[in-house]
Image (cartoon, rainbow, N blue to C red; front, side, top):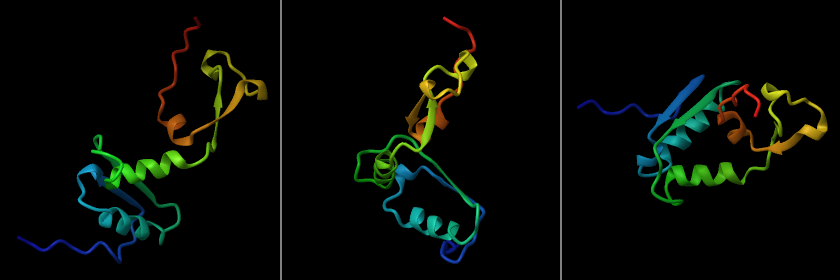
Length: 109
């Protein structure tokens, strides 16, 4: 069986870490994350099923993400449902949560 290549020293523009919940520790995630810092505009995509608790690599990543302050603007009444960009229709939102939602239906209720 061939030996795995070391992750340090790479300079990727895109890295994908799959099934982070199954990693025994943070070594791969941290090596990839530090490698991405070397290239401007690089992106990291973490794909994973539900983890087994807060003391796993995925659990720690989720805890850090949820601890970040709201950094996005969310529409109370979505623009697709005739909402406006007026300040009365805006609120602070979690960037991660806001971008992961699908657009709501255009039908008015």
